[in-house]
Length: 538
Ligand code: GLC
Ligand code: MG
Image (cartoon, rainbow, N blue to C red; front, side):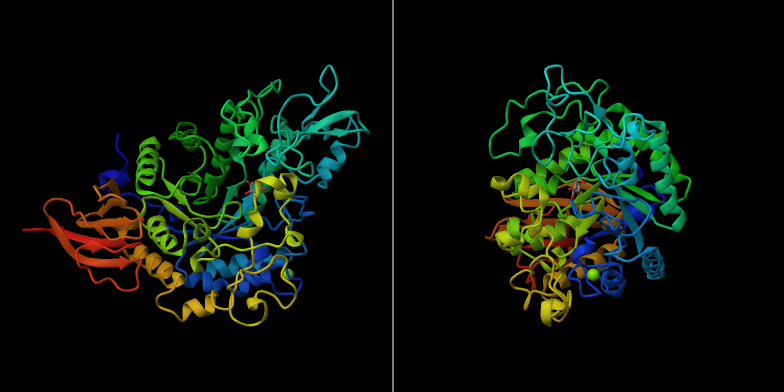
C-alpha cells in the first residue's frame, strides 16, 4: 500500500497537511496594557504580521487562568482566559479576526496535569472521601515510608509530594504545583472531553496536546528501571527509563477517543507533544479505522546534531517509520528548546528555514525564529524558568527562547510600554521586525519568500519526497507533483560544495536561495541552500 502523497494520486489535503503552523508564546508576543506581559489584544494587534508571514495556523501556548508556576502549563480553569491575557470576549475577537484573515487558531490543551489551585485539586486534597479524590493520583507511602515509588519529576526530584493533611502522596510528573490528573477515572475523562467540546463549540480549529504520552500510568505504578547510559550532563529525569510512567496502551485509547470527538466537528487538528523513538512515536497515528492524533510532533531537527550525515539519517528513518496514512511534520524551535540561530548560527539557521519549509510534512515555526533571534543572555536575577531553578547546574535556560518579540526600534522594541517580563535580545535595536521588513536580505524576507513559494508550489506543500545524492556536507532531496520536479540542495558547511544533479535533468529555474544573491555558477556556495526546478535534459 502506498500513500496518496507518494503515488501522486489526487487526494484531499486538509489545511493542516498543506499549511504552515506558527507558534505564538502569548506572554512574549505583544503587550497591550503595559504590564510587561503579552496578551490576547496584543496578538490581535499583530495578526496582520502573522498573516503576511504566509503561515496558515496559529498555535497559542496556554492562555487559561493559571498561577503561572509553569507559565500557563499549570491550568486552574480549562474553560477560561487568565485576566493577564484578557477574557473570553477578547478570545472570541481574536478567533474571529484570525478566521477573517484565513488563519486557523489552535489552542494548547494540557491534559496530564492541572494547577494545584484548580478547584478540582482543591477538592481532591480536601479529604480522602471527597468525590474528586480519585481525579488525581494519590497513594500511601511505601511500606518502609517515603514516596510510593522511584519516579522522578521531569523537572528534577521525586515525582511525589507529601500531603500532611490527608496523609498520602500525590503524583506530579512536573512541578508539585502541577498534580497529575487520573485519566483512569471516567468522570475526570468526561470532564476533560467537555473541555475540548467547549473550545470546539467556540470555533477553535484544533489542539496541541501537552505531553500526551504521559497521561496514563501503568497499573500498580511499578518502579521505573534505571537508565544504564545516564551521565551527569543529563537531567535527573533521565536517570530512569520512563517505562511505566509514560506511553501506556490506555493513553493511545484516550487519544483515539479525542480524535473521534474532534472528527465529529469537521476538519479540526490534533497535534500531540510526544517524545519517543520512531517506532513508538508512529503508533500515535493510530490505525486507519481508529486514528489517534493527526500530527505527533516530530522534534528530531531540534534533538540531533546539525550535519548532512545525521540529517540524512533522521529524515530517511522518520519517513520510513510513518504508517502509510500518517502525515509527517517537522518542528525547528519551541518555547522549550534552544533557539535554532543560537544553536547553529545565523547562516545555517537560514538553511534550516529552507529545510523546514521544503521537507514533506507540516512545518511548525516558533515566533522569533523568523527574525533569527540568537543567543540571549539572561542575568541570573531575571531567570524565571522553574525548570532551571530546580536543576540550576544543567543550564536548561528555557527563558532564552521565551524573550519578547522585538517589533521596532522604539522603547522596549515596541513590545510593551512597561518593563518586559524577560529581557529582550541584546541586538533588538537592529534585529527587529521593522528593520527586517525593510531589508530584502533579512531572515524575515527569506521566511516570507519560502512560505510564498510553498503556497504556490504543490510539489512542496503536498508532493512526493525522496532523498537524493549530495556532495559531502550536502543534504539533497527531491520533491515532485504531477510534472513539476524540484531538487533541494542544502550546503551544511561554510565552504562551497558541488551541486550534483540527478541523471538526465538540467536546471530549469532557481526558485530560492538562502543567500541574497545566487550567481548559479554550478557550485553550492558556503552555507547556501537552493530550491531548483528541474527539467529533462533532451
Ligand atoms: C510541555 C510544555 C512545557 C511544560 C511541560 C509541562 O513540555 O511544552 O513548557 O513545562 O509540558 O506542562
Ligand atoms: Mg499585558
